[in-house]
Length: 334
Picture 1 (cartoon, rainbow, N blue to C red):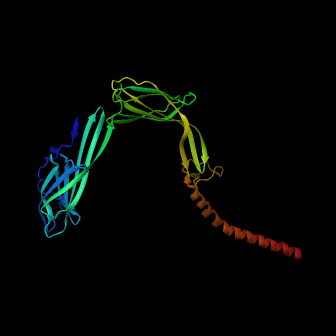
Picture 2 (tube, rainbow, N blue to C red):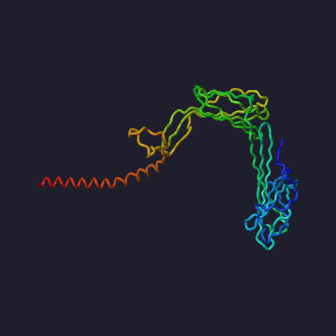
Picture 3 (tube, one colour):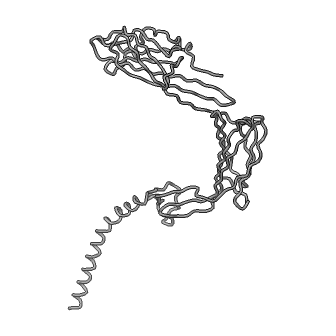
């Protein structure tokens, strides 16, 4: 079933000439501007194919200030005709700006395919008869509903190379069909590596659906190198094809993991909040925020905050040492 924007709902007929100008915000038509131009906006795809049923908005502006706004819809030839459009008649330069948009939705087996055509064009409005071409680009998106109760169930197990169960931390399942329909689901954590998840009833023997599963298992340890902390752990993946349009459950799957790098954190050193007393200094340890500085910032903080206050203390200490030495020499001479 195909659903598109309805031009009739906007009070516009494809290819019809626009009504009297609509002046947004009560902006007056500038002196030296005539409202007698005919503008034909042509809308086509990048390959030059005219597009019908496209909503066109046309704005006329003098010296950058809009004074006229018109709406129309393209006919079967991709044309929207506007009469009474402003043009320069000895007054300021008039610039026309046209925007074109069309959105369609198609529902196919639980997935909504959305196509959005859009484009803009600008040019001066000096002649009395003007053609303003707009080339539109297409953007397509697909949104699929989650599997409903009663959908096929994919079961499986996650094991390491020795066949021992691997706990699942996170897992993502992706299904794709030949027409572009795509659905992404998640598999919840599992301490023993076993899982069961609803999947889409997609795929036939001639056009199977593609399934991929990505698993992040339990960590095995951490290591440090060059200021970075690496977390290693179980990682696994599996790809296969299914034909589930009849609603039958797929065969159970086995995903074997290998140990690899799961994450890395670099260049961050946690330091206590300077406003919080250290434990044992007369107050309980704080659970408040901490300040995290990159190593270079931490070094600068140490240099900038330590050397300057030590200099006066060092001078005073040297002076006291000299004074004590003088007293000792004088006592010995006596």
